[in-house]
Length: 288
Image (cartoon, rainbow, N blue to C red):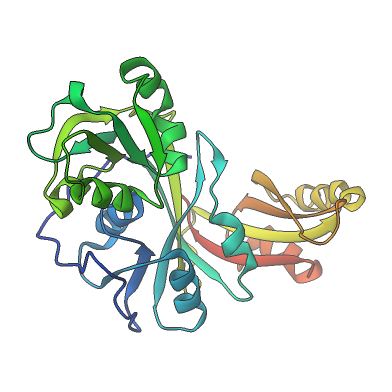
């Protein structure tokens, strides 16, 4: 997987920062509030038009109910593996992944204007973010209290609302613009070791491009998984990654997210899927 560097954010942000607005068909939903890495990913992909910040439950319900056209969700990272949101996507009865977006992350330490780095006593971040900045924090701020937040945007919002100048948050630099904060340090833990990948959930499968990836879901027992995987590779399909997820049914059954090269409507993969209905297609999209 090739990591993408950050893109420049253009224009002013005009989102409602205090509450989740009502979703509208045609809009692009992301995990709010504004100032999160998912917000930044959507800005990179689509600009600031039609973006709707929603809570986790609102996002998945709005997508399922057809109230939003697209939803952007972080699913894997190079540091922690799968995110807490992957299983929620796999739980959806109907889903179409229309794009993936891997992005190299470089965190910013955000604080209210006037805050000095040496005065910071508490930092806020999403639990995954804390794992990703841990080497830097352990080295540079080992004695600062670390408090979990729902997202990078929520962390920045908490700092902005603090009456004192002893708090900071970790997240994308866009959070400084959204919440009138300042960045004390940029580029924290930026590098190929710190990449997050988002899925964009949509409605219609993109046409083949010649360089595609397909995400498959297989529900099976442990003793049958090897044969299923062998059948897939034996059909000449290149397996890229496999993620084992709990079935939520029994201990010896699992859900397997299997990502393969190719498009579900072309070539050997299309032939294989026509004969093996136990593999559910979650989406085919350009490979990044």
